[in-house]
Image 1 (cartoon, one colour):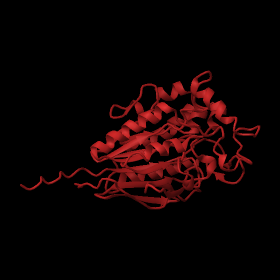
Image 2: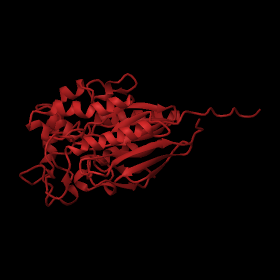
Image 3: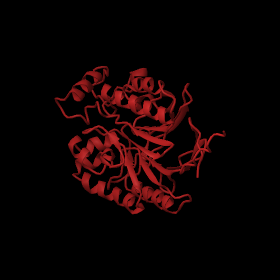
Image 4: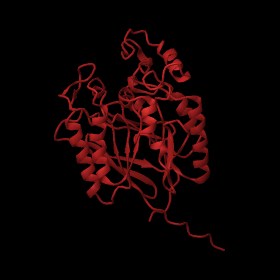
Length: 328
């Protein structure tokens, strides 16, 4: 008796964008004075991306916004909510689901309590599964593709409220930084990631990730992991890595389902494939993309791969799927 023909599955297409960091302020340079930032123009580049996703074929099913949606400069001007409304409007006009990631600039602008109650907390969406009171979550983009979003600022001095275990642990970790300014990685060598604008994940989040990946393996779901900070040293500057990236990698390597990890944070971008064959992509920042250029990607799933078509500063990528499938 012949085996039944596998059922063809829908193939999702989705947009990817990061580090918009919009603010209604004049252009200036980054903290170290090495990179120009185009604060007002970042909103124009977001609109470019949305217009592309509205008209492209195949149509996008959803968008991944990888964090730092507005800049910390809004906080001192008491403009955080106004800036947030300005960037959410183009996304809303697309009339597609937008899944958000918490980055350091969200934490500069808003309290943890506000973020968990806001539209930036995609973990609260009805199709997402996570843990109550936490910003990490997962959802099925199709029966053969699972997106898993990490909260890389669960342990952090800029996100976790004072006098919580997560905040206390973050202060302890930052003792490894010998500089008076804990945002300064000077002289730290391979420990450059231990700065205040980074963060880490708890053992609880790691246990949750382990269980999600175990179920994905069992169901033969291909997994794309997402977080604001990179977790593989060759894919980004060491000063931008998640504090306990090695713990995350240890969990990932126990499983067969993960095809790629996507991040922002390092504004120059980068990519590398690790020893397990996982492609780590760090997407370039919108905020440091000059007027007239672009910085976003559009991913489409095929039977054996996901192809990312980049625009402007974003290169093209091909992600090999762990579990090839039939596509409608």
